[in-house]
Image (cartoon, rainbow, N blue to C red; front, top):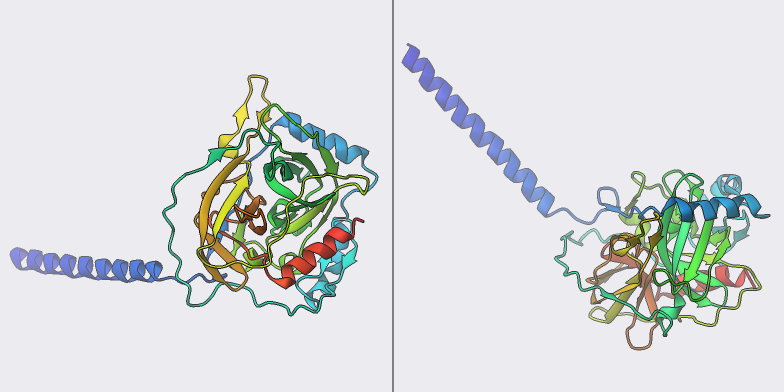
Length: 346
């Protein structure tokens, strides 16, 4: 009897093991064939933290500003934004800019047929030095703060006082509020700030992003990526001479350069200061779908908001959002919205 019971137990264990393996196999296959769905694909976009010295500059600027960020207004206008164009904007100062272009509103979001495949990308980033030559002298390192911590991103000048960057460097869609201050340092090169820096509390983001909610702090969902672009407006008296144009066309296999200030390439001095260096990674556009550009340049934290541009004519096709995705800015919808937000500072 004992031998018979042992045999039953063995068969039971074998059957249970097979069922567990079969279940695991099916779940693995399902995960491998998972589509890029905004409800189940999330992307880490946490920016690197800046040092306490740089943070203190931002906090001091907040105390001195006569135009603090008006997050209460953003909450007040959210009901309006739900029934508006996704390219309307409630700025950080609480003012509304309505989308008035005749360009049709594009359909955005991940394709239901697009398979998610983690690309194998080689780190081909090269240091940009000097940073004072075109087009790199139009790229800026950006510090920003939520009032408690400070973070680093990248942006580029598109006119004399407007910096194009990523929304997640401007607006927190998990807590639904703007950050409180941005400091822009054009062509920063480690210890060298060739054009100085300027702080501001004025920024604009698409209503499509404000109306969405991040899956968790420091992350984006797929549905947010087409709207992950914003502008930071500096003082009306600013007249920065170095600027990058926006592109109006993009295609799969187009060559691109992604430029930014990666946190993993920063330098910490013995005194505790962080210094940032500009890097470029070259690649190609490998896919386009529903307002999104997918590329194979090497992008890491801190490069968010930096330009993804044509290496020949320097026209911006996208900004760094996730490691491989960015909003397709070559549509009339996006460019019209961006120019309307920029002109609000004239």
